[in-house]
Length: 196
Length: 267
Image (cartoon, rainbow over all chains, first blue to last red; front, side, top):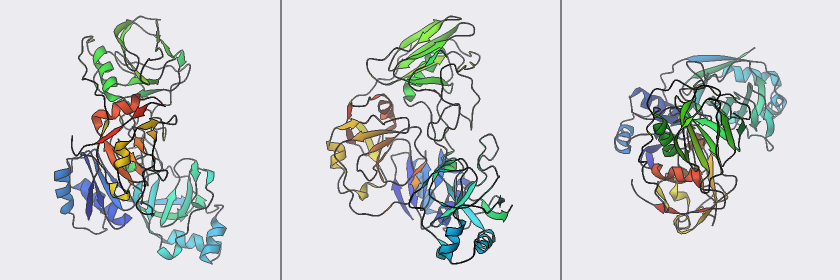
């Protein structure tokens, strides 16, 4: 693992994969590290509001790996009627029903949140199924849209512009700032999609 | 609220600790000015104030009289704001953002532990518009009209080391140039115009966590200093981090004004 300075009150730790980032972030939180925030991302974890010396020493003690003692598994009911379902079926060279079967057969892991409050980047899509995002992003993707792009699967918590391929939609509440756990798919959460 | 002016929001010290869920920190951009306003009226440091850009904000006191203070760009030390009285923020001669503190604080419902409005994802209370009515809390302390605020430091903005300086051929243009504040600067970032910083290679940076004060360089090569409403993660390289004690100036420089940067290794 390589660490990089971010001013004098934060450290960026580089890791090899989103799953490693999620595992490191969970390990750091469990370690009782005094920090303003621990922010996992695609290939890194930011330790913000820390004393860089002790934080770097703690990072050196990380055993590595991708195991997350998952707090919970969440099932997300999906109506598979997304406008890009046919496009994904074409690219995967399978019928649309097979796209649904594949998507519901996988177990995803929330690696990190970003882009919007509660928007989780989910890993677990096999590499041979990765597809590029749309060349022209949609000006408005509705809240609850279930989508894939590149190595990721995600669910839009609120309506926003977006270029991911839309498979379907869910009525699940992805983001509720008044809830004890505001993000349904907080980092480390395991996620399964089921037909609504 | 008689008139909301250009942009008025409720702000406190921000919503720290939720970046991992994609929530910007928000909070007063000129934090020392907001803290001074709270001290002047006897509020605790975490009380919410109003942040307003330039002038035009006009407020009517619909309740009993209160102590109030105005700090930042336009200033008025502690004064008694009588019942029914109107408070107007004049257009400042220098600076951009002013803070109105009222004894008891602005008592809107907190969201994730803060009353701040974040203008990126709109977490927190909605922006203040004409006709908005804002509740006030119970005053808890006596006003302290005599205060010695910390000196306001001028000169180049100090920049601490960042994680991705090695993405650029040289940081000499950053530290050797005058940067003009762009008009699209806002609570998310101070956007600057000047000589483009040149990247060493191509390639894309996987999205990574961003800190307050990060000097991020998008493909244009022109830096953005991330302010309180910055996105919690971003995909452009960060070459440095503006010293926390210099961030208030990023809140007060106007479009068209110039800033310089100076590299420092530590605080």
